Image 1 (cartoon, rainbow, N blue to C red):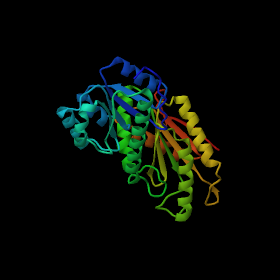
Image 2: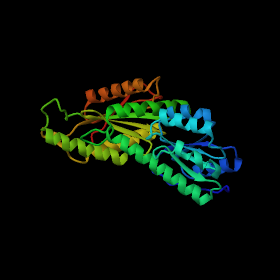
Image 3: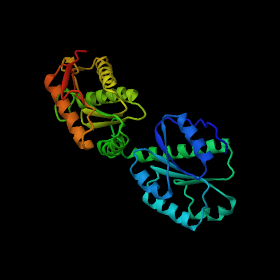
Image 4: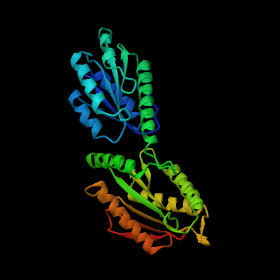
Length: 315
């Protein structure tokens, strides 16, 4: 394979792990990743793969080149297949023809695909694109059982599981992580402020507004009955304020009426990473509670610059 720029087009973030001895091959994949910001590349040794996958919040494709598919390698792949879930991890192996006899020992549609060397640049691109598509399909199947039944958003448990992995990645890579909670203050399944059918309509409508503003790298969930939560990476403080103002305007522009007055919302947020995701969520909930107390569509932020800052938004 020559060192060319492969245009792999994907619509959501993922990680590539590359095991290769050849500098030319490494340069090829570095160029490919440089053309797509949603791809992250790590050059690894075989003994690092398991921990890398377990510590990543992203679906991971392992590409192995210039390696023999011998008995030791077969045993290693079988261990990965046993330990790592199909929706999180897949392997693309570039192997020599003499190793084809070992394929039956590791072939698994959910985990393993191969291409015979030498592999042209075009074939490399096609194989990687197919492997990525298959990996995302497995992830989509896995998510079906983790969704909120009313809105289709991530449920709280799935959100916390993915959020902790995202938090660990942000802490490790020293990137900004923001947490935003939006409360529909007049909508409560335990109260009588709205008939249940109206509650459902409002929750669905707001969830659609949030989904349209969710970036590929964000996590969004229905956190509680009337509260939505977003984890957003690489969002500067100024962008965070703009993002929250836009959310408030979008929700209020729908003119939802509750008990004869426009729906009241509250927003709380923080970009203070803290020690754990749970601590970050508690900070966000404290900011949200402050907004609820203030009323009038308030927005409260706990930021690195100030402990607590509240603004009222009469939208």
